[in-house]
Amino acid sequence: MTIDNERVRVTEWRFAPGASTGPHRHEMAYVVVPLTTGRLAATGPAGDTVSELVTGQPYFRPAGVEHDVRNANAFEFAFIEIELKDGPGSVASLPG
Image (tube, rainbow, N blue to C red; front, side, top):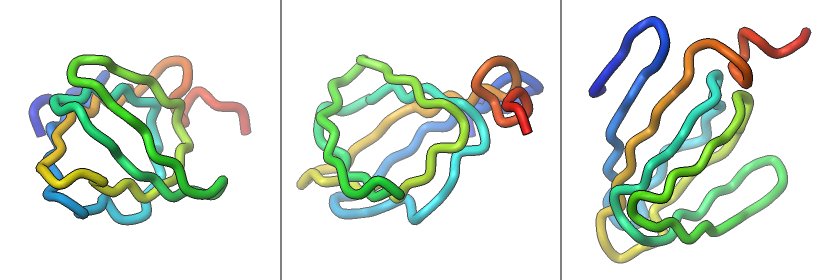
């Protein structure tokens, strides 16, 4: 873990070729900033997807995302994950 305070949690993740996160649910909205250009495969409730990610090009996802992500490259894949602990898109702010 790089930063963990009342507003954000910032973590650097590194996955060997073929390694996966294991099935999980994101309780917070988050931003991913790839440190590597390559492909990540994901399996979720809607099925399988493969995403082409580019170093330095971030993406955002709302809280509640469920998936198992796998490194679909022949090399290590790394990214920074920034979880947003409060505010719009966090589980705490969702109705119900």
